[in-house]
Amino acid sequence: MIKVAFIKFGGMSIGGTEKVLQTIASALPKDRFQVDYFYTNGAPYIGSDHKHLDTEPSRVEFCKNHGVNCIPVEVRFKNVTVGTHDWVGTNLWDLFDEKNYDLIVSGRSGHPEYPFHLIRKTPIIDTIHLAGMAENKSNTYRTVLISNEQKDKWIAAGGPADKAIIIPNPVYVPKVEGKLDFNHKFIFGMHQRNNDSIFSPIPLEAYKKIENDDTMFLMLGGSIKYERQAFDLGIKNILFCPTTSDVDTIHKFLNTLTVYAHGRADGEQCSTAIIEAMSHGLPIISHSAPSMGHAEQIGNAGAVVDNVDYYAIMMRRMIEEESFASTCGEVSLMRYQSKYSITSIIDQYVELFEEAVK
Image 1 (cartoon, helix red, strand yellow):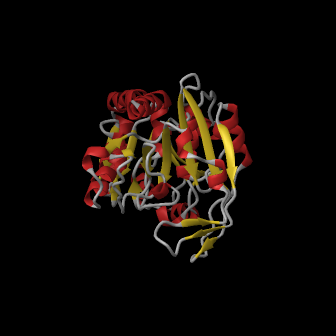
Image 2 (cartoon, one colour):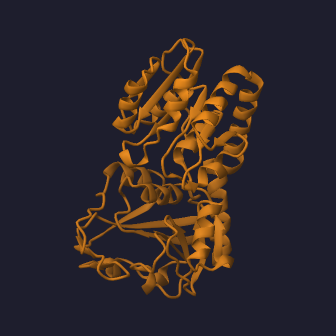
Image 3 (cartoon, helix red, strand yellow):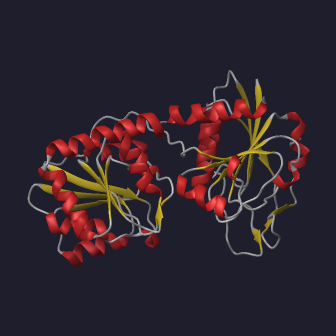
C-alpha cells in the first residue's frame, strides 16, 4: 500500500487546479493507495486583496465518497509578500509529517512554495498549472505538465527537462442520456464560463456568414458579450443558456450539438470543455490564440484555423461534407478514449506514483 499525501491551499474549493487534484486523489485505486488530502480554508492574503475560493462542502463529500481521507488544516493568512507564500498561523505541522508518507503531491504555479520547500526527503510529484517559473528540488521526482506547449515554457523558465512529463488534466465524464429539444438539422455550439476576458468574437462572426434556416447556434454560459455580439450581427437562429455547473444539463447540451464551435481569446492549455466535447464524439473547430494547447488536443478531430473566414469555410464544410464531419467525430471520440479519458489519465498517474516510490 502506497501512502500518498496531497497538500493544497484552498484545496477543497471549486477552482480548476483544486478540482484536478481532487479528481486524481479520488480516482486512485484504494486497494493500492492510501490517500490523505490536506486542505486549508481560503484564508486572507497578506500583501494582496485577492481572496481564494473557500471550501466547497460538496467537494469534500465527493472525495470522502471515493475513499479519500480529507484533513482540514488551519491557516490564518497567506503571506504573498515573501516568495514562498508562507502560511501564517497554521497547524499543518501538527497534522502532517513527511516521514509518514511514501509520496507527496503538489498543485502549484512553479515557484518555490509553502510547504513544499520545507519537505526535503520524501519524493514529490509536482503538478504545475502555470509554467512561468520553475524550481529544481532534489526530491522532486517528476513535474507533471498538461501540454507540450506548457512543457516548453517550463523548460525555458529553467525547469529540468529530464523531470518533465506530460499528463493531461483528468475530467470526469458521466453517462447522460437525452438532449435539448431542437428541430434544426445542424447545430453548432460551445460552453464557457462567464468571463469577459476570454470572450472570442470569431465563432459567432463565422456563424453569421453561413447561417441558414437549417442551422442553429447554442451557447451555454459565456460572457454577456456573446449576446451583444449576436444582436449586433443580426444572428437569428441562436439561443443562450445560462451558466450552470449541473452535470446533466452540460452533457444534454453536448448531446444536442452537431459540431463543437470553440473559441477563446487567450487560447487553452488543456481544455476541460474540449475534453467533454470529445467524449461525445463531436467534430471540433477552433482558432489560433496566444496559447495553443487546444490545437494539440484537437489534432485531426476537426480544425484550428487562423481567422474568421477560414472558420466559416470549415463550418460550411462540416455542413456540406457529411463524411468529413463523421470522420472528425470518430477521431474525436478515439482521441478522448485513448488520451483524455479518466481511465487513461489515472493509469498514467498510477504508473508514475508506483515508479516514484520504487
